[in-house]
Length: 531
Image 1 (cartoon, helix red, strand yellow):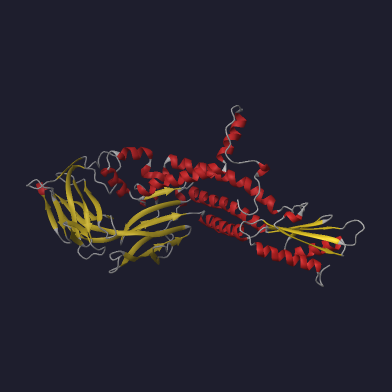
Image 2 (cartoon, one colour):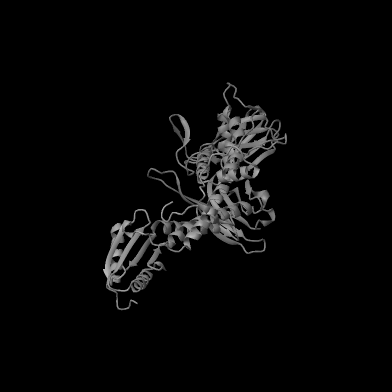
């Protein structure tokens, strides 16, 4: 530690110690606790937590990008089962990651609480007695005067108090110290870590975070059944949801048309009509990125957008088997998107469509792609499957993945895969009397995140306190000064020794010497208002 270093509670060494060979259960428990709460263990756990988070940023996470996770599993059939058993598709919810996190919290608390008590005692400590030989200190001065020793000590105490030192007067010396706020900074910093942990714990226990994709013109009611994904805290209750509703009335996007980032969305605004309760009046809010709508203790964020092609599927009997907008998820910054459509009730056979949507269709090196994110030359290109799509066996499926295990891809007469390349207004007749598909239009969707984090203000307070404490511990210079007087028997002269010790690393020696010289001058030539 820098600055006013203090020993741990009772002078005990909290570094990891070898395990004794013979001990009872109580001693073993105390030894294990010392290992878990040692600073070395905390650093190791912090490193393990950082290493454990790496797969979470490399491997697609199912709760963040379900489509990406599914496509990764399809592309790596041998690795996928191993990764799944290791929990790498949901790293932050896996048992091993939670175990590291919980152990780290226990270790931090075990490290911080004893040190907090030590810093508190150091903050209230009295300046130590003067060393026997002040001349050995880095800063030292001496002079001789005819003033009585007690008078010199009284003047020294007054001068040091004027300079905001904490002063203790002894029989033949004055001890003074300043910079105790450095210890206050250390104390605040360590306590703030606990405050941050408490804030995160409150949010994790009583808060929640959910996500939903809403098509422009449609609405949302804050009910558990309305969410696409929902992650509640351990103590969260469904009745705690606030009864608000909202409808996306309009959505505007401003696209960059030039420069290296051409084709990207510069800003997007979603206009919401919302009610805080069913009896409340309708209000309007322009929802923007990083400008959430706050309703009570719940925040509503706009975090993404994309396209939802409108399609109508008629089966071989002419009946409508599917109709409406279908969410396609962007796969790159040009909003080239991937989506799946199912019509399980179609006759004579179930119909499945899988493919991509190109907002601005173009050919690059002979391959289809989207060159721009806006709707300039939209094209929908999909493959056709029929058979058992796995929707009737009772098992859950991702809406962005088509189960093709028991389905067959429909082929053309010459043996090539049948494809539907459609523009708005097109109708394509499907082979084998399966029916028709009509591309009716294109709508936009918004990805909305809804969350309640009750402990965020507590955590923010802890972060602010940590910064204040860190600044105090870095920039406040702890310093000690001693003044000792002595007069030999039978002599009228008093020898005054002064010594100082700057206890901060990297202190300014010249500044300290100037202060000591000023103190000596004030004692040798006292001011008129001095005692």
